[in-house]
Length: 376
Image (cartoon, rainbow, N blue to C red; front, side):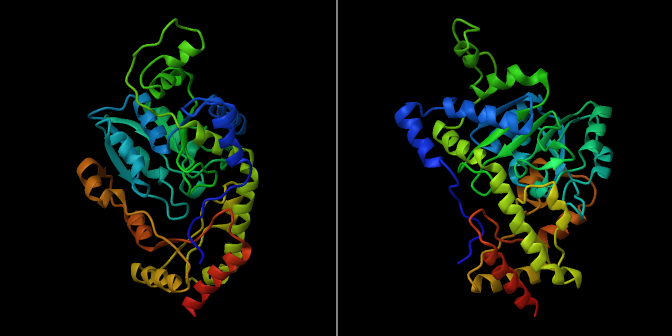
């Protein structure tokens, strides 16, 4: 069977976990491995500050608090994204404003953003789909004109770039995921990247349940106490220990995924050339991390049949996302800006193919051969 995803070990993950327990004697948050992950991510991304969180969900929730999003505010984002992108702001009482995506990148259509800005708009949340960069220059220009905060949902985008800048380091905040479906994994886990000095001190407090505990440990205050709102956003030291080994091998992980991406492109090129499917631009992979490979079919019915056809050959392929603007909660808590025709069409016809670190090129060729058989 070829699964859609498979968690993996690439280095010293289990050794690090043993060291955390036996050698370091520290399992709660902010232990030695957490600090080493902060340092390693800072060097990898060249960012001002990075804080590990228990998930990308936690990172987005922290960003929403730091951006001072509250009741009556609006936050512009794509509808073609995971529910977490919206939930972080709905929890603060804000209204997500859903904007359509571009058909070429499947990222938010930057040409529609400024039209969606109102006097209540507080932030823009671009989602870098599949590790491919949104048009960040245009988005940052809009944000500057209207005094808006930009929060990059870079859940799929560690070590993807917009030119020479890592995704997640361009907006005021960036949010990463280390969920087991991502490139670099720790089961669950995430990180908040803080690119604006104004938010550094408060971010640390919010992450520590609203206390100045970190300042206490650094000897800056003689006792720590409750000074702000916050929650328990720290990951376990076991999570950080596993993650550190993955981060040490991040370049090799991404290189392997880009290789598999290219094999898919080569094997499915004929179907794409004759219009049977729409496939990602192979050249786009040079600046992205090879996170996922998708194809777009002609109809919902055709996608359903292909999923069934592949399952009969023990190949697992999945679809996503159900558009947020048409979901029950999306209609209750958010609103759509204009017609979201591209979002609706892509949601019905996009199919994600298996892609994971332990996958072999022959596995990719087997998946591609099954897809060619389907169309034959």
